[in-house]
Amino acid sequence: MTWINRLNAMGPAFSVAVMPTPVPNPSWVSRNQQLGQNLGLPHQWLEDQEGLAVFSGNGLWEGMQPLASVYSGHQFGQWAGQLGDGRALCLGEYESPQGRVEIQLKGAGKTPFSRMGDGRAVLRSSIREYLCSEAMAGLGIPTTRALCLTSSPHPVLREELETASIVTRTAPSFIRFGHFEHFANEAAPSGPTHLKQLADFVIQHHFSDEPFLQSNPYAELLQRVTVRTAKLIAQWQSVGFCHGVMNTDNMSILGVTLDYGPFQFLDGFNPQHICNHSDHMGRYAYERQPQVAYWNLFCLAQALMPLIEDQDLAVKALETYKTVFSESWHSIFLSKLGLQVQEDPALAQEDKTLLNDGLQLLANEQVDFSIFWRKLSHAASTTEASGLPWQSVADLFIDQQAWLSWRDRYLSRLQSSNSNLAVGKMLSVNPKYVLRNHLAEAAIQKSKQGDHTEVETLFKLLQSPYDEQMHLDHYANLPPDWAAKIEISCSS
Ligand code: AMP
Ligand code: MG
Image (cartoon, rainbow, N blue to C red; front, side, top):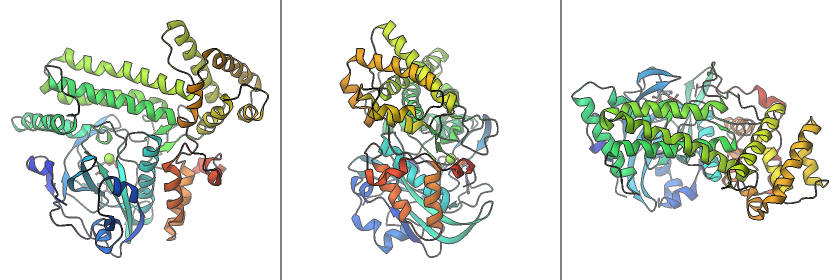
């Protein structure tokens, strides 16, 4: 394996060489053999003691040059100054069958950017990241991936004493909006030079799939990041995913979901739902995510301004967010209904109203988001409204009158649309299984006792969230009462 590290080659302004800090008695919690295979990694890496040593921070393969990168960012709407990889380490990059890929350890000890932190991650939060990144990949939503999860009895103090765990993540790049903000904030003459170097690097290495057409490549970069981000957030909304900490340092320049912390998939549909217990103002509530992403892109635009130079171009690039988000959102949500985007403006408007009224109905009663869409997918393929599938959707509502009146509008729309194809696809856009908090929690509790079977079960289940997997039906049930009491904060 030939290890490269392009960030390292860019010079000392971008990263610092750091060795992982070893942990005692590491062991495997889970391994993503399929991902390892797709990425062309030797099989034994996820099996033998040498692999275990590397993926727990106790060893390196020859040629690896671990480093931590520096970034800054806005946290909860405020400029937070310098942050950086405080507990993440890039082990190196290599050429995989799917292109260059970076391997990163999260929780492998202190770095010069750890500030007051211990550089560690606890088992609880590492299991959540490991499972959720696989769940997102299963859902078809762009995300960093997780290759494996190791743990150690090494004690880590959070609100209570916990134990250390390390997630090995992969992505083409972990560069964040905050990397750009960092160099935009650095004084001249080095700041502007580094900013340009970073932007050129990202354009050359990560946006080379399509040639840049605009005469201003930095405005075009902003536009492309904007488009990717808009599409990503539309996908999040469509499965009820709340990120929880959409600070600019957690926003990927590639438009992939990054840094899983206090995330949550909605149970009942409450658009104002706040999943992060530390988010007292509800800045990152479910319904605010689209606006927050736009706000974050604005920060990126400001950081890129010295390179773009032309304010109108920057505004134009940012403006694409509104159309792309809105179009993506509508098209995904219509597909959740088994409908297609209509060319005719009157019909399109009718469908929008039908959709919004449906969502309002769900919100009024906080109907379970995933269960509603899944049951609707089964019902929509039969026009026999008195049959069991429709009854089973009706059972989710208290206000039967309101439900029946919406259902009739929807049924007549389905009949007139004649879109059997779109209806047939509903089961592949409305997942049966999502990583609800209580499912993750149950796996965490077992793993804390040394039993990782539940992590493994969820891991496999969530790889195919659209498949019926009848024998695991109960994982698609309503959450138990205790689920509402789970409090997930930034502490991880
Ligand atoms: P997060 O809220 O997880 O996105 O983290 C924000 C910043 O704090 C990043 O720079 C992290 O690297 C850093 N950080 C979070 N937790 C720790 C920790 N336990 N030790 C060191 N740095 C941390
Ligand atoms: Mg982060």
